[in-house]
Length: 349
Image (cartoon, rainbow, N blue to C red; front, side, top):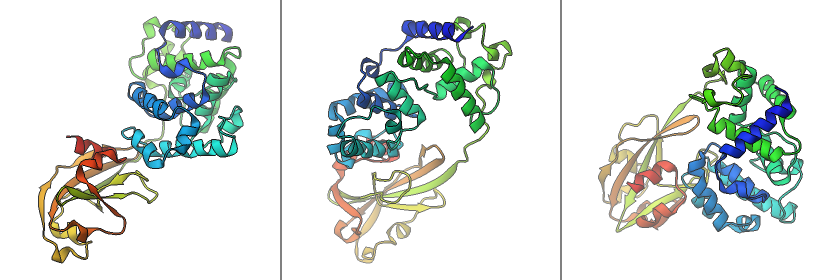
């Protein structure tokens, strides 16, 4: 099958099977940028409401730039990977300062934005401006490697380069926006990671992986993620409806988010009251009692498993356990802060 036939069949398939998604009804590069950043490592179903919320609250790049970081992170709450939200906010301010408030129109300027890589830049430039840059995300990698029977590891520079070269040779230069949408949708809907629908695939006759019965072996990834466990113990100080929170300022997971006072240890074993209060110089004169200790709650991140316990401690005078980086707040207002998912879920129960 020649490339012209391939792209025509692919785009025809797309027109018959594409999902009706809000960001497909616009050529506004700002809104396309929002959708692409939100959908990085996020399922479409989950990302839809976040996209609508951002477009409603920040309809222009100027609105996003004028927002506070706390407000942006709060709106992002639940999506994870909060660095993406911070990069969005930073880049919006960058566009206002260095591009006179107009979203850049050239690939080199788009890819220079913080948090934008080759895939995202190609998506924005092709969808908004019809520029001939092929998108290569996980879906495209899967389609190309299966069609061509590429069994080498996709997480190696040589294979990534090979897939990009093939994608550049296949892209429809007259309809780069439709082609890119089509091949991504094809990977998401037809050539799925597990149990792809090969029986109705329009490329079944030319797919090398199908011919050699190695579909379940492609794409192959050589590197395995090394996971690390961390153990967090959160102290929920309670005094007449008030509690304490702090902002994570260090360059670590959840930077910029809010949390209860934290003790990190090397295990999830329950801590004693003496351990929980040892960092407070006034603790010897404050009456305190443990009201409740939660079970261990876990949040899985890309490279880490966070094991968390929550300790509810009734204290006679919360002012005496306030440290420099703590904020005294109404306990009922804590869910309004931008919180790590594990805390958010705990409070929602």
